[in-house]
Length: 364
Image (cartoon, rainbow, N blue to C red; front, side, top):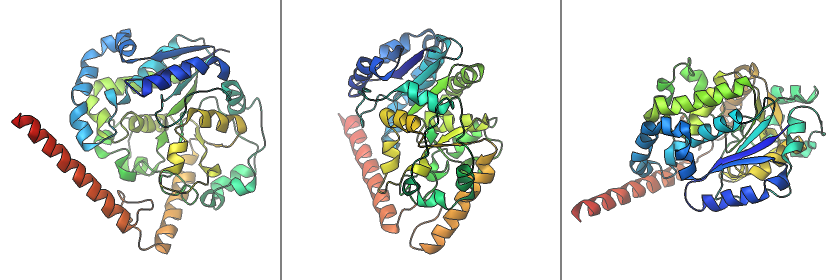
């Protein structure tokens, strides 16, 4: 079995992170790398084939960034291109890891081992579950998690990222739902009805954090990566419309495919704004989490009847106990009125600054 490390970096500081990944890849158990800069991405035959759609995405990048400061170049569509290319260059049964070329975390991968992560993911090695004091308050109260503790550890063959732990308090919340701050907005849902037959049900499902994706090379995963790429180039505006862009479409794609999902949230107890979210962007954390077995696997049939039902019940109980917390779909998840007001003011100041800058450019 060979393992490929794949990523794309566009500009700094991301290209520096990409070089650090490449320099340490062999130390982390990778046999080969597919690490692209912008020029290498655009030179790929698939990118050449879909040049018009990619140029359309990039032409609107500046305008989108005024509304959403974290707008990605090409809306992050390059992930699907490099993953599809890496899978097709690998043998059946090999593995490919996508890792974001992060500006938040060190991309020196020395000290982690992708092969040990694969061993646990696939059930070839079964470490003991983390101790009881590592279990989150929220998950410890759910029947879904208690049922996992009564059975042997589940295995799967791929990690389609991880279920997105909540950004406010992941010790007391189960996950971040697709509806939270319109992580998957209605425009994205309407554009891909084949992935979202029931918008209400899809909105309540957990969002997926795909900063790191570990895929076994098989027909299903090649088909999924091709579909992800096709969604980008066939409807680029809809692909770019949700805040997390490529991550939004990835979330509804993998959930519509009914694949098992890796859930590390039961064993994360961090508090603080975005503490868990930021941690789960780290490639080193991702590989250590898998290698240590600090996760559970959510079967496809358990998504709505297990996690979503538990999320709804927990949120109702939590909201009743915290009447000062805003509870609409956009505001749900732990913002106090003061936090919400401050965020709206920051957004208003950013819009005003962008308008002023635009007028200044027009005058000159």
